[in-house]
Length: 429
Image (cartoon, rainbow, N blue to C red; front, side, top):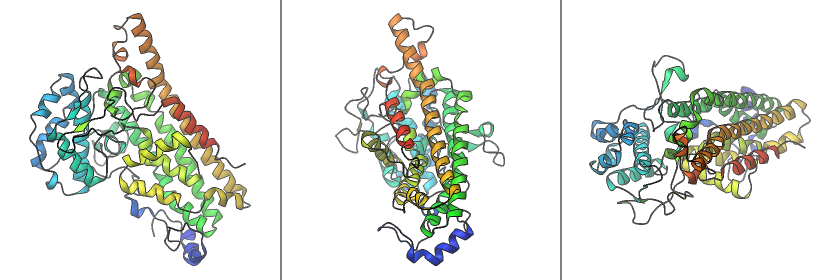
């Protein structure tokens, strides 16, 4: 029996599955399970045991990818990539190899595009990088740009393989400019993902329990999800200890930026050897994490108009199996309606607590964005107006075009507050 299915829920479902309500495209006889979605029982959406090396044929990629911060600093990255041999992706066999290749090619691409900041962006990615990057992306079902699935989910290793999964025992496989703050940003985000694992394991219990009318198992699973969301917020608070706002805003942030809805690159980017017309892709965004999408679909959170369109588009930046999980959750019988139909105070309280803590998590995200983006942006404007760059040279040189936008291209504070407020609308009335 799978860890994610409560015995009672499974037994009841097997007896009543023919009578359970399910969406027309969902087989009501099938027990909902995490097995189909590349979700680890221990690590959730995090890629288990990422490789640290590619086959020797691909050493030219790794030699550059492992030195991106240094090569950007010395302004040598573009010239080295321009001289790089064109390698075929056909010798990449396993999913793990493809993920490491995508990660390596992604950080090389971000460094190549943004080596000179927003003053001297490029219009074309050279074919020696663009062609294999496109091929690997197509095989994985990911876009040819750095995503959350790369920089966070597939970019970690333990210093001591037998040691704990914590900040002291984790390190990145590859890094972007920003030193310890860049490492801290990705590692803390990884720990937020880890904190969500108990919630992911509880999602099938909720879905199967709703199908079968098992109020007790649904209530218990929602209580576990609620605790997990609170643990995510606690993990998120580590940002303050491990990331310096001026470094994040002034150095690192541009390397997470894309070439869609970005005034720095209004035409997008030509992938030489792939197609002659420029292509547009959004940069990294918290909205590329599958977690909150799953919670939204489970709880019945509805995002309308612009915010909903952006969130839906971000699903194209996730591994296809993770995107499919969101879709399949959305096809299940409504949890919110189920809760409203039951005369269970414990169930109603558990649902309300989940929504409360999801709202709190999104409110804390707004707090983080204020500290790491809004306040440094205001300081940068002040310094530029006063022509005082020495004190805050780092943040004053940050791209002005991104001051009010997320690296994914969203209008930042308005978007986050709208999403948070739409989450509040899910409370039971």
